[in-house]
Amino acid sequence: MSDPLLSILEQYWGYTAFRPLQREAMDAVLARRDSLVVMPTGGGKSLCFQAPALVGDGLAIVVSPLIALMKDQVDTLVGNGVPAACLHSGLSDEARADVLAGIAGGRYRLLYAAPERLVGEGRHALFSRIGRQPVQFIAIDEAHCISQWGHDFRPEYRQLADLRQRWPGVSLHAFTATATARVRRDIVEQLALREPVELIGSFDRPNLVYRVLPRSNLRRQLQDVLARHAHEAGIVYCQSRREVDDLSAWLREQGVRALPYHAGMGDEERHRNQDAFLNEDVDVVVATVAFGMGIDRSDVRFVVHAGAPQSLEHYQQEAGRAGRDGLEAECVLIYSGGDFARWRTMFEQAGGEVEARRALLRDMERYASTVGCRHRFLVSYFGERWEKDGCGACDYCLGELEPVPDAVTVARKILSAVARVGQRFGAAHVINVLRGRPTEAVVQRGHADLSVFGLLGEHSVEQVRGYIDQLLAGGWLRQSEGDYPVLQLTQAGIALMKDPATAPDLALARQRRPQKGRGAGGAREAASWEGVDRDLFESLRVLRLHIARARAVPPYVVFHDTTLRELARVRPSTLEELRHVYGVGQRKADDYGEAILEVIREHCQPTG
Image: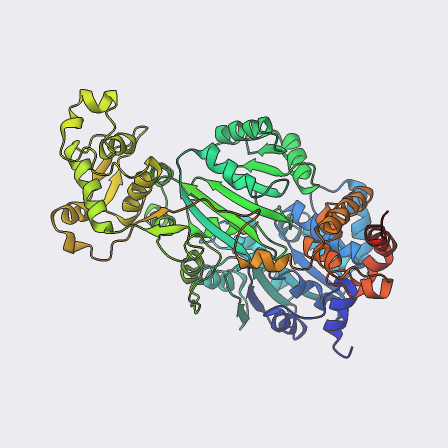
């Protein structure tokens, strides 16, 4: 193969083609041009700096913010036959000394380092060991951490611009999966990138199915999701530590292999639970957002948010931990209007850029309440044009959302009910009035005698709650602050109640039917399993787990599910055939080839 980059891709990673923008990003590295690359999770971002490091001479330095992330990438590289190492605070003195000696001896092509190792107190020891070793380039992964407008700002990243003074002739390359235009400008400015090549990939993740549910019975709603993903990996995000503990305990009672993860746990227990998830000892982690960027498990088949995040940037980053292997996965947002009221209270208490954070939250509200394609909404938010008619991979495009006939009339009934009860009651009471339920509280207050009593009697609790949440997000209603928020009319709501012509485009939606099928849904899932021997796939998963245990690495470091499915589809019978299967490569064919072929032979041999 005449193309050195393609030769390296096939030899070390088992890939025979570039993904979108990978070639351009690698060319920028090889040309020693500064660059900013925004590529979606699962788009092959890491390869953009890993493969070029094997073309040139010298050491490539990769800045990464989390130990778990570094360790996984280095384990994967070493397993592929790439000389790589990482330097971070979690290493023993002996291991650190070995890495520093290896740097001085020119043993590595890729060195992963935490930012504080390059700009903090430990930098002098590192710089002295690099010594006269030529530095090819510096790649800064998760570069959004440098921006105060990013969703995961880290002050130590701000100092990385000093690397230019240390290596003035070395190119800098910033990589991230999530960055609005404002964050991208901040990255370029803070790193002092010189006329950088800017490569902005699509923000769309077509393998993800997005669903949004108004929160009603959370545990029942979780059971519905889990039923579609039995024995598959998933993450459930909660907004409080207490809810994390309660839900994880309940899931274990239901027979689900689940563990909690939040900042209130001790470091040892938290790391133990994270490792259990990465090593496939458990299927589900219930977590606060403290369970973050270090999670590189590629076969996460679902992510559930049991409450709305504070921004779409946060949501895309957290939901994006599903389907990193490019296979189908499901992202479910279960929300209520109270989520947004709580965030606003927290913003006020924290001070700072309150109005900016409120604006981001409003965008999150609009996403939750939208009656339209979710993929279109998300990519448009990040500044990308959407050219398709539909995505075939969200609740709206799959026909699971039904537009409410005469939505303006339904909305005015709800607004009237809020007004008739004096704007002094919460959503649950208003729903009982509208549905004509003569509860003790409704009867005692005389609300069973109101003209609005029973106006939405044919609608379910979940449906009316969903309408109220959509009216809150649209700005026709608001909730008061405090522990017992009450519904109140806004000026727009008062105007609509008086005159339906003030909101001619108002739309409401309701869930039409429960989702069917074993997995995420949509045509993409069926296509990804076409021709795959599922029993063989499961046998190969067992082998992968055995290899991972022997090597003391997470199973996805050995092979992604995409490779196992391809093996179970083509069923190679020789080492040469095996080497050309997507994601295998020369080193893994040499290391695991005979074991893989034996599993395939045993599965395919006739019985009886």
